[in-house]
Each structure stands twice: as structure tokens, then as C-alpha cells.
Image (tube, rainbow, N blue to C red; front, side):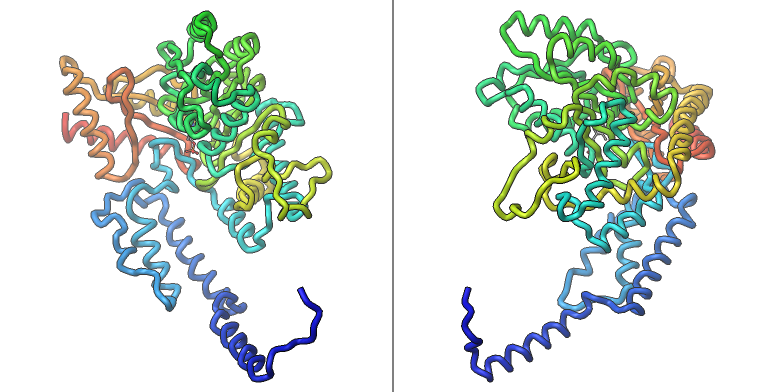
Length: 495
Ligand SMILES: *Cc1c(COP(=O)(O)O)cnc(C)c1O
């Protein structure tokens, strides 16, 4: 650095100023004026309105043969296109083909829908572009995130001091929990091959993925036996731990599900918590799907014991109907989440913590991040909790309604659902397992080609099984009737 007078020759300086002015002009489209902003916003709003006004009639799955390839015929170029052309590309090649996750007819995997106020929250977050990583930079933004985490922790029944993070989804949230569990247990590389993990075959694959990413690929994994409702058997868990201890191994992590992905089974959390406490194992509950059912009386009863866990994951992009991109991890002891994720760089020396608010950057792998809280905060502030509670209770009852209906159509059904997933299959008398599996595969294919609703399948004990998931906020009784109609047609077309 120097305090000397400017030494640039005048003609150089004039050229520099001219170039700066020209570049500023060329970059001006980055800052549209009021009129242009309005035109852009109107075009986007019009597209959104076209979509939402038709949503009841749009296909839940569009088997478009080109699969959005039209997008590639319009490469990124030096010059821009009119907004109408850009929106058309988006509607034709992105919105239309494939799954329509905004549709109430999306009854596959684990849908949520994407409530409109959440989209407006994203808009507000992006325009203000508040920095939500560090309290010092975005005190209100960080307070908002932490307030939502405390609200969720309260729902789970964690102590007020519990810490957490709004991550991009359940997978990343699970990774934060697993890495925290590893460090909390003091596991080092030399211990990994002896450090045993307990879960069931129904555990979501993101957990074994997280275990591997956390460096623990060598850790032995025990798949604990389940009851006929796919729930972990506590006696089998206790026996497996005892056997491993006797063999000189080190049990350290028990993973239970509060709503498995396949069937929505809720493991007996309270009994598992007792075993975890006795065995001094970390107890993680994967409530990515089932967690927000805690808003209902049924959920509160069924998930009892979740409050005794060490960490838990809930997906607002499932049970709170937010658009994709929100998964919450909560850890009972805030110091442990911080110990794994805290870091400090010299370039951060101006940042400091304040007023008891933990900075998201200290409890997650992210530093700079999307200000995800607004998409959750805006709908909750605007609507209150009541409609969410009602919609979730509705989904529980829709599952019962559908199960009854599909059984009346002659389908074989799985066990009474714990939550809002129904399993069923078409199993004509006398058909072999292979034939039955093929028949059900053809039903899935028929429903996908038809597109009015979208279902998925899974294998349970070697049996090709159909699933119906009522979770999207736009899924109602008429959707169930529609699904039953389509499934009846599918069977008729190919008995
Ligand atoms: C969806 C889900 C996950 C994974 O979460 P993503 O948000 O898809 O990353 C984990 N566990 C369960 C039970 C789930 O339903």
C-alpha cells in the first residue's frame, strides 16, 4: 500500500475511465429498472398462474418422449433472449417432462408438494440476499433460522438448548448427525473396524452413505430383525449388542426410523432409547418422513421416545410441504454439533458470536449458504400451524381410506400403516411369485404411462410391492378416488 499521489499518465487515466464507463454500460442489464423488473415479474407470475390454475388437471407424471432435450437446443450464448422465450423453454422442457412433484397425484416416493408462500419466501431471501451463515453478518437471518430450529426442537421434545441446522435435505442433515456421533464417541481411524452400527434393512440408504462419507466404511453394520410391520425388534437389538460386546467390538450407534421410506414403519423409539442409554450408544432417529406428524395427536403418541434421542432428522420438504431443499438436523447437546463443525479462518476474524445465537456456519459444513429459513418462516407466520396440522391428519386418514378402497378392489394389502404409506399388490389366486411380481410391475408401468396419478413400488421380502404415499398437501380424498380408478383400470387392462 502506498500514500503517493496518483502517478498514472493523463492519457492512460482517460482511457481507463472510458473503459470503465463502457463496461458499466455493458453490465447494466444486471440491474433492471422498475419497468423492466415489472415486466420480468409479470412474465414469471403469468407462468406460475398458468401452472397453478391447471394443477388439478396436469399429469402427475408426463412420459414426454424427448425428456426435456429441447433445453439443449438453446445453449447459453453471449446475448440474452426475451423473457417469453426463456419461460417457454422452462415450461416445455423442464416443468412438463417427468414427475410433477407439485401435483396432488404424486403418491410415490415421499412427496411434499411445495406450498406457494414458501416460494415467495425464497424470492424474499434471494432479493435481500441476506447472509445467513454468521450471526455478525445477518443477525436477523440467523435468529430466524435458530428460532425455527427451536420450534422444531420443541416439537421433538428436546431441551431448549439443543442445536441444529437447516440443511438442503435429509441426506446432508443425516451426514451432520453421523459425523457428530462419530466425534462424540471419540472414534478415531484405528477404532472404525470395531465400531458397530445398528439399524434395520428398512433404514434409508442415505444413512449408510453418510456413514461411508464420514469415513466409517469399515464400521460393521448390523441389520436388526424386524416384526411383521417392519419395525425394529428391541430384543434383537439388545442381543446383537451383547454378542458384539462379547466379541470385543464397540457398539456406538443405533439408528431408528420414525417412518421408514418403504412402508412408513415407526420403530419402537422408547424401548430403543432405553437400550441406547444402557449401552451408551448414540441414538439417532431418522424422522425425515415421519417427524412432522408430531403435529398430530397420533404422531405424538406413536413417536414417543423420540425426545430421548441424541440426534434427529426431519425434512420440511416432506412433512411441512416446502419445496425441495430443506432438511433439519437437531442434536440434543449443542456442544457436540459444534465440536464437529466449528472452524475458524483468519478471513473470519471480524465475525463473532453474540447473544447466545449459534451461527449456522459453526454447526454445518456450509459457510455461505442459501437463506433457507425464509421459505419455512413465511408460511408458518402467514398461516399459523393449524393448517399444517390439519393437512397431516388428513394424510393419515387418507391412507386408511385408500387401504380400505384398494382392498375392496381385490388387492392384497400390507399391514395397517403406522403413518400415511399403504402397501398393496395384485395377487391373483394361483399365480406364482414371479408372475405376481411381473403383474405388479406392469401395473406400475400402466399408471406411469397414464399419468393421472403417480405411484412407486418396492421389494418387501422378495415380493414386488406397490406403495401409495399420501403426504403432498394437494392430495385429498378425490385424489384417492382417482388413484383407485386408475388402478382398477390397470388391472382390467392386464388381469
Ligand atoms: C427422504 C428421506 C431421507 C433422505 O432425505 P433427502 O431429503 O431426500 O435427502 C432419509 N430418510 C428418510 C426416512 C426419508 O424419507
